[in-house]
Length: 179
Image 1 (tube, rainbow, N blue to C red):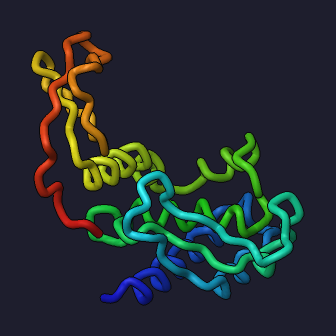
Image 2 (cartoon, rainbow, N blue to C red):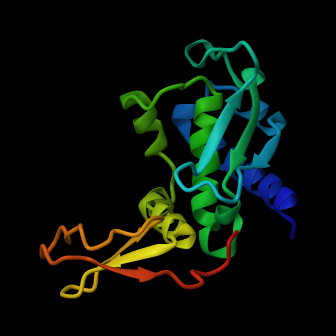
């Protein structure tokens, strides 16, 4: 299944699930289906998904889904291993599209209503996956074997946070598929 169809299917699932959440009952959840969906660049390492607004619309002035130009999701999240996290990312971005611009307490409370708790907690693992996938070097601890993916060599100047041993630079090999 291509990523556009997968995104559409996921969005339908997310909207259906949002209809089951009583706290979202008075919001224009049906309008979310009209938001164009897309993908971020494959080499993005920090951004997992984003809600992009129409030109001239300030984040603080969002009135609803009509102010949203598109929602983009990282293409790596659209793989089988990360699909559950991708649905949570869509939910997160759809909350922004409904007018919850920041990540304040109200937003976090609504975000916590997503029924798949494991998916809600996959963000750190996904970040680590992206970082390791794009790393050119692994700073490796000779004592505890912890690896720290990096884009540059450390040249023996850095120490492990856990055991304080000097980290060794190891050239990263193929770290899996690039997208």
